[in-house]
Image (cartoon, rainbow, N blue to C red; front, side, top):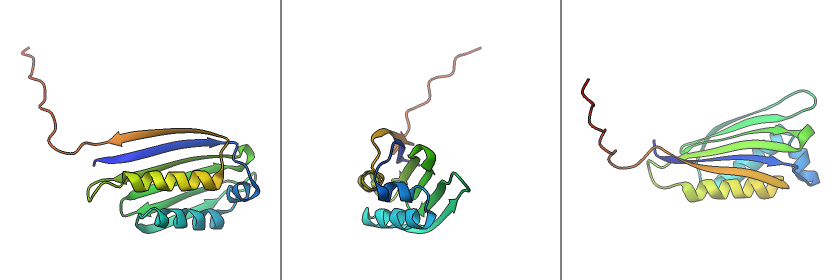
Length: 134
């Protein structure tokens, strides 16, 4: 259950390629798969879907380590995404951060809100506090 969850909201993406990807499920899929593999994560499946006007794409890349999920708002030049990697078979935090960095360079947000959440815990859990008698 231990892992790193990266959450991002990217605003005002700029550049012709970045703006085109916000509407292009096939292009966004290929870019996401390439970035995922380049980060050293293991793709086990994917699904990308385009919405009608004003457009937008939602997509997920299933990983042996967990997932990449994203949703675009081309009318706002924005993207929300998350990368989660469980660290059961090893620490995949570096790969998760590399994936996020690669996608940020590709989609070129002017403003980025990003958070890192450590989920679960490794090793023994702390003892529960003693029960309070009634």
